[in-house]
Image (cartoon, one colour):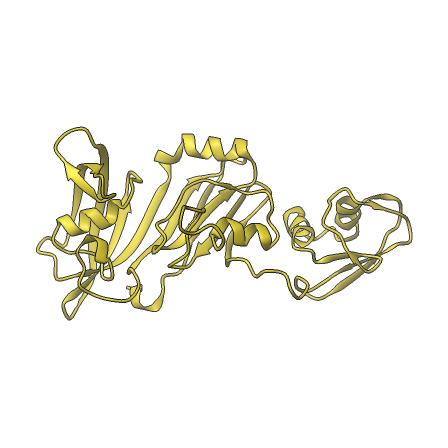
Length: 273
């Protein structure tokens, strides 16, 4: 985007003045400029949508956020209701007892999205698509229908699978040491569908689709099949490095428009089929 300068033709709110002056720009994009501090009114950064503008005042839209603004996570999708980003491995979604500062939600709020609500979570060491709602109501609506959301992952697993595709359907429970296991009774149902994409050396690249989103579900199911995810020292991998698990796709019905969305986070090179 090139930098732009607009002279306000009449009095009004900043967002609507920009919308009228730049009719070809989607409303969501204009709001994003404001949220990211890219709009200057008479030389001063303004983020309020309803900031008063007087006829003749100069409005400048910057090509990028001002220096010093915290760089947020890569945006995969955004509109007035939702924000989807690509989370790197090693980053918590929200704070816990050990990490209160550097989390995905904090980075995004500091990067220009102050009003976000966590729809779902990924493990700290899992990378990929992470979805947020821009209101509490939309978050609740999405969580109520989350069982209908399509979730696809890719993982590098140890060894070669005897059965190249299949489904793991078990009850999962968590012990006092925070380890998750399949249990005969009393757990929560977890369903994982897997398909081997490629075998290289003593490892297998596997496509995974989950019908449920239980804690550590894929990691536990792969371990119990005898093929833990590479880098998953908690669940039996002898390999080092990062956890080789990536949330590549979210498919969902938009909670406002009803349109079907497919949001994709490209896998890192080592996890591409």
